[in-house]
Length: 112
Length: 114
Image (cartoon, rainbow over all chains, first blue to last red; front, top):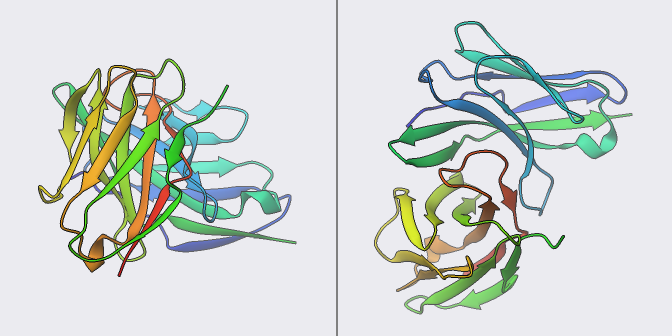
């Protein structure tokens, strides 16, 4: 299984940028990196995904290194509502089938 | 539009019983995948269905099974329940196969096995 490694927890002051790192050194060339977050007691919520280029949407930016072995999710102006567990996931493909392997994630605490 | 609906939200069973969980995907979505979440193991992939066919399966024993109907609704079944099956079971739907693009998760079914 393709593995991702994330720090178990991070703190961020409200209004500041939150930079969440992820290591995925065994990623293959056609495997995408996905980010989801889970707020307590809710189902995970999609944030963003990418293959090799940096991506940005209304929620966040995804920066993928040139060798694709790591990535960083950036929440540009964190708010208290961004407090959640953030999962970095590699979508593994085997033929026409795929699976998502969630790691233990990073618990982001946004504080006043 | 309505989100992913999972029923029941909470249930309690005893060891040895079986349980069936239901998932109604977002209208138009044809892929449904299932996940087990526990404090010790985190979120683990169970299986994915697309067009009534199981496309992939995670590393779970045969007691865990599922199916998908022609209207894309899906059910998963766990037979001969064990204490370790206590978990939050999540399903997610997406438009196309192979878990590509955005997955939309339901709120989950919380199973307690006594």
